[in-house]
Image 1 (cartoon, rainbow, N blue to C red):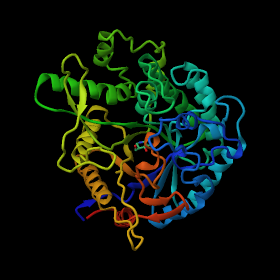
Image 2 (image 1 turned 45 degrees about the vertical axis):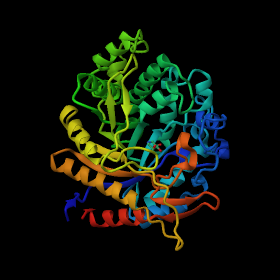
Image 3 (image 1 turned 90 degrees about the vertical axis):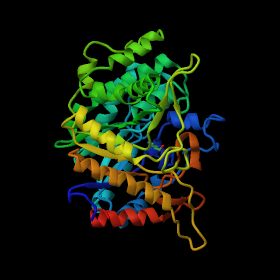
Length: 448
Ligand code: IFM
């Protein structure tokens, strides 16, 4: 085999609560910011919501059976805060916890290790009504929610991820307004990022207290920035993008505080990027974690400002093309990213907690789904992981995004990332060719 992986390598697939569960009013679940946002005209491109999604809340046993069939070693899912604490703070809804209890037991019975993410963007709406992530109280409210979940599941779930992609939750949610709650407030976005990180730091000891021996980490979406040319302006644009996308989250987690160059960029625009930071916060955020989760999809090519504009991301043709969501396919940037992480933030095991491609391929006349481009994408990126490992990078696992086609946020159902096709009208699941291919990779323990 050309690209072998060790026997203890974790082979998984990932999903998130709002994207697959549906059943948004079942068993006492409260509203989340995504229920509100998706119901806002124009917020989601195809006008859909996650109200039904893949109906996983009711069909989880079918989905766990699929995981077993594919030979997955692990399944990364997220827990919906509004199912567990519908009001954001206060009363715990036992029926919400019961669902995750059933799911975890089904996974364990199927030989699939559960990896639970505690926040994948579905903030209880009552907390947004009180200010959302830009308000410190939201970080504080995260702690009792985490305690309720880990008290209930911590005996069986031994892999915990506090947050998924705090860059998206803060920047898309509060700066560009493309995601819930759809606010466009630069200062609020910076405060949101800080409180997301603070809540991570506050949650880690709570998880450890209720889940003895657990491995705890956070997942960042890391997007390498390549300068469009050798010019100084393009190099500086790449530095800025790297600073805001990657280092703004990596550096405080690894105990280095917020990157001073990015703080200075903000100051030059009259913004105090550290306004929400209180004494002691950085120590809380820097709590040692057991691993770093890396979500990688693409790179950005950065070009310097033109006529007073800010630096921007430009589209390069890219030798390997783009997926149907428009993201450049660039596995080499994944290899380089992993090598860089091991060099600049050493001694932390890494897990690819998401990687995948959006392609529209659906069933042919024979019912088969020949998603050739997804297979090529996954193969190229797994080869990049193997190469990074051969260079000494401690990548210990890989989770394909996603197990199922699902609600792709502001795109609605118009983008399909699944290994498994979902017919939303009938809720039928059909494994695509990529699912069969991935099952073979898992069975062999590598890519040929
Ligand atoms: O669907 C999302 C997921 O929720 C977070 N990471 C990126 C995926 C594809 O956009």
